[in-house]
Length: 275
Image 1: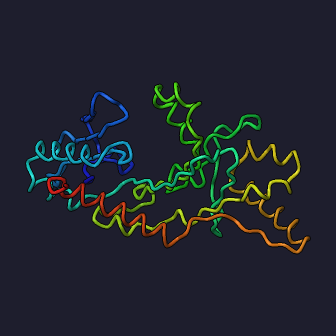
Image 2 (image 1 turned 180 degrees about the vertical axis):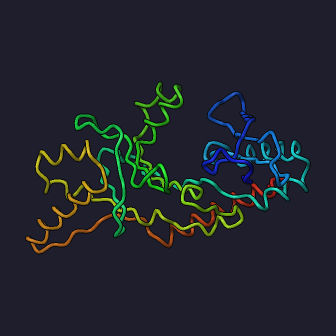
Image 3 (image 1 turned 30 degrees about the vertical axis):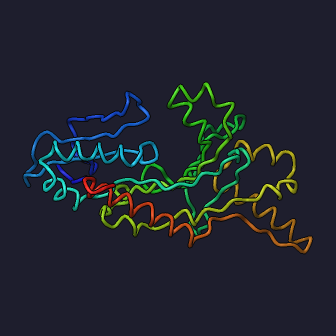
């Protein structure tokens, strides 16, 4: 959370890592990373990493109070975290009952962006699509939620066939990779970049040839999806019709993001006051 000596790429030199796990469940964990030696300024680096969706608010509260006690008490904790920086935060939306196989998503912006799919061999159905460069910038990810969970947690595999397919569209904010950091206190002001996302309605798929329908399963890159959108537009225009796309209502999106981040910031900064 606070910068210290780096490894030459802007990342603090953490030497100790601790996992706070609830009920022995590796799904429910909070990670704490510490730097062992002081830098010239006399400061230490400390980093917290956790997924709020995998823990209850009470579990997060208990974990943070535990951290608070170990780093010098309430005053020292508040002193540190009031200046904390956010290095990564993910915002996402779930589409229950929607298979990612039928999701043709793209970012509605004028700039050309990098995008790639996993797997990408022309034969297998795409499982994950990255819209933007994941190596050096914030980016969007579209993936089959349950498939990802089943790979990380074996217990999901035993019940996956009885669960509803669910697509997740996620925006991964990485301020440090973009050359700047964002204060934890200002998290509610983070841009709602999910409003860039657009989905082509499956109602238009019948306008594509069989060959294109097949590539829609194996190639979901930004440039490919936009080409399909252009083709659909031309066909509809020749029939005197206009194409519409799905998008997330921006006002609702901003309200929900501010609500979620506001509660999260309050919980992190003042866990002892959380009811």
